[in-house]
Length: 148
Ligand code: ZN
Image 1: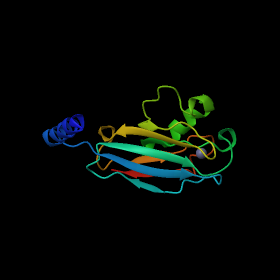
Image 2: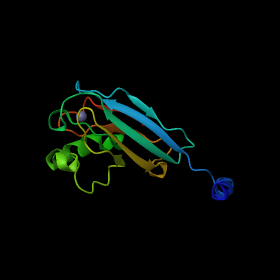
Image 3: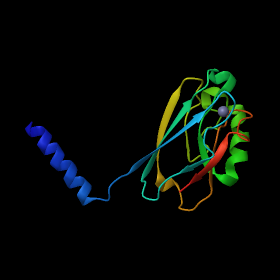
Image 4: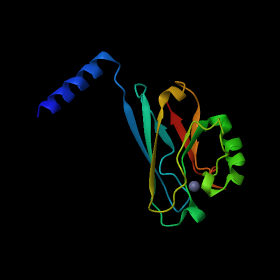
């Protein structure tokens, strides 16, 4: 019992001494019809990090209808998607070490879920960001805007 009280007061001390970390959770789903269920995701200005969960609500395997969630600056989308084509499924259809990629999940198939967390320090307030699926042929349809 005593241990709980100490832990609780430590937590309180930390949160009052420093600006509180705020993890903001976002969710998006991909379907067998090659669609994301959201065209826009909004990150509130006070979020210090984002936990993004991607759900594949379809039934098709990753080899046939794989989806990932890749975040880049809007002008980088076409080039990042194009450079990722030859990387293949094991590399999540992204060029190794592509510094234009701000954050990305792995490619998943029907029934699977995956999450990533990234700091909002990687984003500039008011910047133009687009998320998309880098599976070959998907990025022109499966994309949306991320606002911060
Ligand atoms: Zn996809």
